[in-house]
Image (cartoon, rainbow, N blue to C red; front, side, top):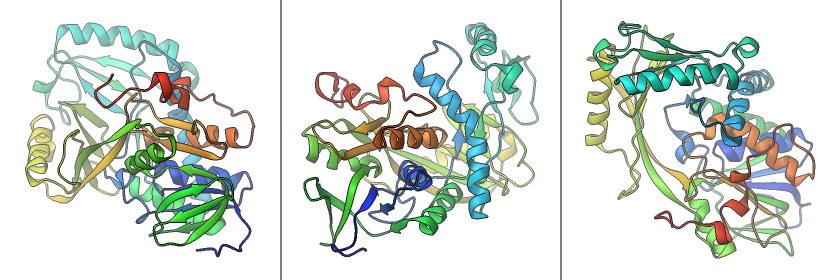
Length: 386
């Protein structure tokens, strides 16, 4: 750690998950002297999972959040390619597409309407992203036909990445061009002196602090603002042998994703448990994941489970992420609560937040529902939605 006498960093980021490392990457790119402080290790929280599903919202009831996510997913491939060129590492990214089974006539009618709306929202003539309804029996070599009696949707905007590889690539960039310290938990920040306090008793100097430590950030935000604006929710996933299935599209069925990866593995998940005793994987949950996924994806039958993961994901009570300056503070910002969409939007969240810090205009406007005023004060919800 830098000594207290060292010149202050322009920005310190508390948390080395996807939001924190993306903010650090963007800050370094803007010429800011950047420090990342991680309480444990890179990807120790929910960002260190297995699934890597980069899936769009439905092209229906369009709003600024959906437009922001669309632009993020559209631009992510170039962002990752540039990062890979800068580091010489791979993020495991590919535009894999996604299958959605249709189980009722009502769902068929609904998605036929979505297919028409996608032509307006996804601009297929310019982007190549399509959202097509296919007849029953389509793609039955991958999705069991009995799971899709009214046909299926096949859309090409969906993509996947390897979460751990993406984080490792960002971390390598930060280590090369900034400073990243693990086992360095931030416990407080004195805005008057610009001093960060760590659980070890050490300190560091920074002009700006960004809190991006996942669900534990809600504790620090409550300490700083007096308001509790989010909670943790446990998720669980697993990795199976997927040799020969690397080029298959992702499937979303029965509330689960099956996501083939380019390294010959398949990720299955994830569960969502609001009440949990700990963050450890549950053998019962893992067996349930295998059974449910194999039911609609018979190609998984008898394939080995290679690893299991469980973690606590940050979820704001208002559901949308929190991105921006904390109320009542001039130099403390937050980026947390991405829940299930963090990996797809993190690079644009970072662009918007760093632009706010530098008083610049971002290329893509952050949705107002991400802003602090949406989460605090009279707009705040408690954990039960009131």
